[in-house]
Image 1: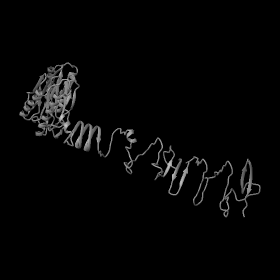
Image 2 (image 1 turned 120 degrees about the vertical axis):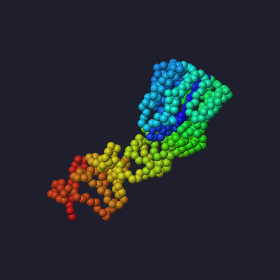
Image 3 (image 1 turned 180 degrees about the vertical axis):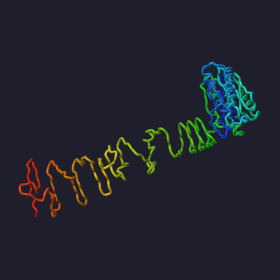
Image 4 (image 1 turned 45 degrees about the vertical axis):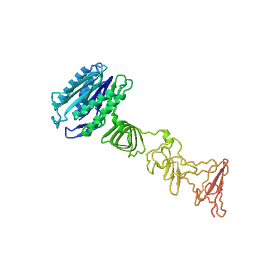
Length: 458
């Protein structure tokens, strides 16, 4: 069951439709309550589809194609085209019924209700086919202001009461042509139409859902939106929707829905499985993960402390690579902090982290500084350079047969602080040799002159 309402005003037309559809004709019984049934045909003509979706949709598509080449089409010509295309699509559907479809099902029908401005004249036009009345389609056509047609009322008395209420609005609410697209007159018509759909929905679960409307007027832009009654209901302290929710703006304290689509959503507590919104302003937002192609936080938010102390827990941030364009400081105040758990620091071009490349390695009782394979290691200081051992030896060694060279701009002083212990020069080139040779001697070179210091054993 669908609800479709079309009305004309002095300078245009209004269409109102519910959002509920179901497919109970096959093996599955599926239903949706947030379907937009209002389709645009031209800039000033819209249509509501109901019944068998693809049949109505095909007829509207054919009508849209025809009017694209004839923008000045009159309402009667449009009505004739609509009747032709819908009848053709309906007959084709009945001739090729899908397997499992009951041809005598009470809900087997199709309809299209149009409205708007054709040639500058307000009109409504509709065609409906139904298996209950075969070969006798319902045809609706009217031009000029003050026309109305409503489809979907279960009770004839309810429909007549709706017509009477609309007439009372026309009599009692003044028309203001300079206000729009929605003036007070149109607001009343929309409110009563929404109330009528809700009344039917309260008695028939196969009707209702998200109500949408479109207002077409000569001197104003087209307005298409959700029903006025929902805009009031969605601005409460607590909102529960059995299916999906769609609105330009939603303000509520607590919300529970299967799917929400909104331009702006203000909510202190929300439970939803699928959320689509341009802007979210909420007191608490709890989620497992955020996934999208690009996620950004503006610099002003970061600078004002958007990520503050204690907000990132231990082991909460992990990455394979971290690029820092400036300094990395571990000093929140006057005291410097530590870097813990670092095994080694490697050269910036290192890709392997092996000891064949320059590194500083930190062990439990040792620090190793290496230039790596084939490199040279420099330890420089602007003033003093002290190699100090608090207890134990200080070894300076060269590998293989390489020399150890001590070069000084002034004296080289070997000072043994404790006079009780001599200074040893150990393991020279050989342990002896003939007098006059370099064997068993310490070679001294000063200003290019070579001298030998002969070493004797006791």
